[in-house]
Image 1 (tube, rainbow, N blue to C red):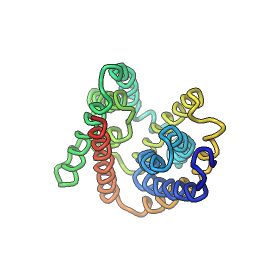
Image 2: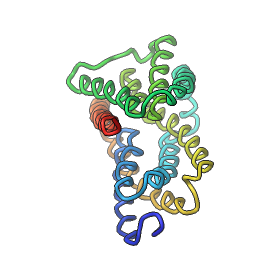
Image 3: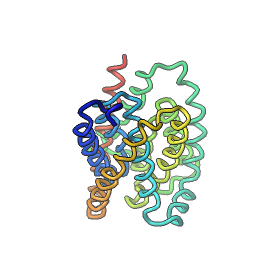
Length: 257
């Protein structure tokens, strides 16, 4: 651990565990943003590749828990309900990923961050974008295409997915489950990609493993809170976290200019 966190590694590991627990609480309450919290915190004490490695296993386990909390049948049911959204999102994510080679990283982050902040801020101000819960396959495909497009050009699919689910007025239990399933599939891909890239290796694996317990403990606490809040409060908290996530993307985009 000293090789990646330095000579003062016990204190750094304690800080990392506190960050993981905080990220878990946020994820337990609104269903997303744990990687954002973890990356932001870990990047302050470790190189970017080490911070990324630390996120991988807590993200995988927390999304598995979130997606399967009501059982495999419920998870498969949500996949079936949102299959058009997911298929369209995957197609446009693969297509828009080709733009990464010709578009600057700062522009990508601003393209996604600015609309997210505007959407969430207007919604919090009482002027939300509302779509019918059963919008029809054309609208659902269009929504999935937008989320997939942003995910492909930026590598960030959490905020646009949450924005779309919120606009669809998705019930909070199903929204949590759908997010867990979607992000869980992404986390499996992330694990495979970074075992292959060498980011998750013998040196960084212990850190990622060490952060699993505090992250899951925080998520347990967050889920207890989420179970006790109503749909309106869940929506307001989700939008508030979306504003923070969007502003963080804008900040990163401006710093990268």
